[in-house]
Image 1: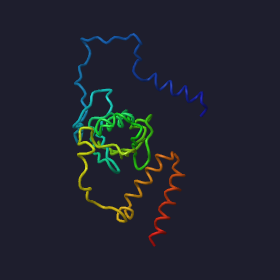
Image 2: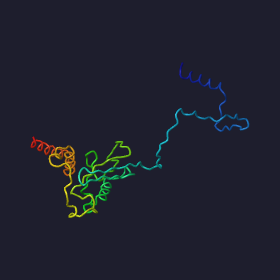
Image 3: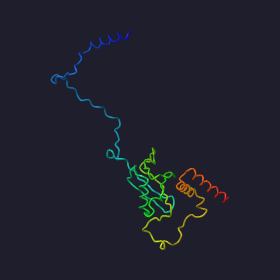
Image 4: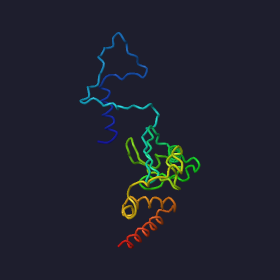
Amino acid sequence: MTELSFARSFLSSLNSRSIKLQPDHVADPKTLEVKGPYTLPRMPHPMRHSATSQPPGSSPTITILLKSLRNPPISLSLSSQSLSTSIHELKSAVVKEIGTEASGTENIRVLYKKKPCPDSKTVKEVLGDEDVGKEIEFSIMVIGGATASQSGPTRDEAKGPVAQGASGDEVLGSEEFWDDLKGFLVQRIRDEGKAVEVWETFRKGWITQTV
């Protein structure tokens, strides 16, 4: 069967059906057959609604934890923070917490998974596509011996018994010390490869000396 003969047979079958309605056809409401409304069937399982709804256009918020790797001890929780919060804003929050307005944020380092975070980046840029849920923890390093609080005792009043805890070889034998040292070197040298090389030199030298 050729295309022409197929088209003719198809058109003839259409002509045998009911008359076509004109584009401007209007049905007579008096003679129009009334049909019941069509309703969709019920879903087998009802849809669950989110417990926490946010206004349209608002960005999700998280709780940011800031904890120090060494002295001074810092444990700061910032709730309801936007993902657009910058690393510099986190540093400013640490400045207010420990009272180092004189030195500003220059002596504060923010690390995520032991890697330094530039001030210009936001929390979202640091996380990338990583899903951290409702809470995220950053590590803090304060360089230069900043005190924990300006409202604390003076230098003369602070003199007293030395804080008890691990010291000497016990500290040098812990993984936490060497991790802190690596993070410090990465911050100061600003070259992760070179910093790791120096860190390995220090550690190998210490191990050789203690053997």
